[in-house]
Length: 175
Image 1 (cartoon, rainbow, N blue to C red):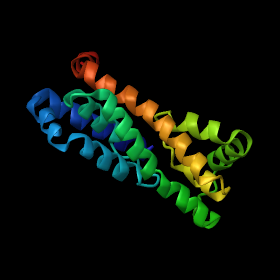
Image 2 (image 1 turned 90 degrees about the vertical axis):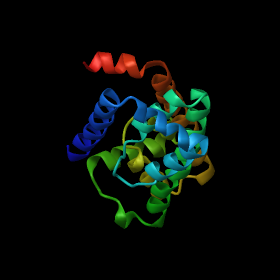
Image 3 (image 1 turned 135 degrees about the horizontal axis):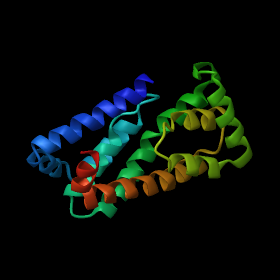
Image 4 (image 1 turned 180 degrees about the horizontal axis):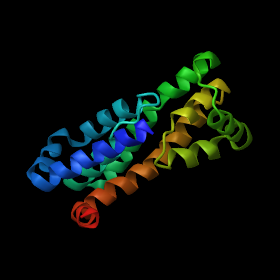
């Protein structure tokens, strides 16, 4: 519940900042595509603490010339960042929190493999537990990486294009 409140707080702060100072969004341009890549790596390398990467990707998709490049570069950075979860799971099961959700995800990875990883990496949820499960199961790294990259790229393309097409629409919708 605290994690959800943290994410909502980040979104509200960024949207409020944009509403009162829209010129601040333009400052994201200075990061460029390299910034998209580095930010995606860093914000996806955090285990179990989701950061505001979706809002940042949407903002960069809105201010950089190509939302498509933002999505693809961000997806690659995200896949590289998600290696931390895989490596943590691979290093030992002792660090993994044994909760029901972990067992369910582990079962899905065993049964459907790369399809589970792809689908869950394309969903805007905390993906770290899937990485932990894949690593703990010794799922082939290259399959994990490709499935994660494809899924995150699709998700980030959608987010970047949403930013490119509609900060104003989103703000109007939220009031």
